Image (cartoon, rainbow, N blue to C red):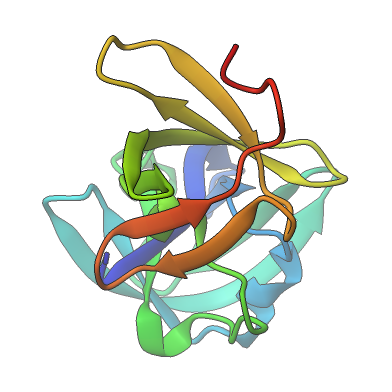
Length: 168
């Protein structure tokens, strides 16, 4: 389980005062309004920064960090990610999980290993798990209560009951 969750990707600067254009990687982009500080960087190297202001423009979030004084400072952060720690994560309803926690789970049906979750497609109606088996073949498993029987993030395991003909 990751200690930090990606909530945005810095894609460009915005103006000359050090504002950053961010693509939100969260279901609720307005959640940036509730954050005082975040981590910026990569999976291996992050620095904490304080949020000064947040604005919304089309499908992006414009964020100003107190530590970023001008466009030159902002340019150094381009293509980096914004992370939060788990204590600042939204509380999920029962039987829902963060995507980053599901990726890498081993998927089993009746004790037989089907494969590992490599990615998740968000379709709008329900997610679809992309599972790769030992032969690197992709199996698309719908994230439905009738299919997913049990999830254990701690044990990195998911139990499923696949619809008839899904593996054929």
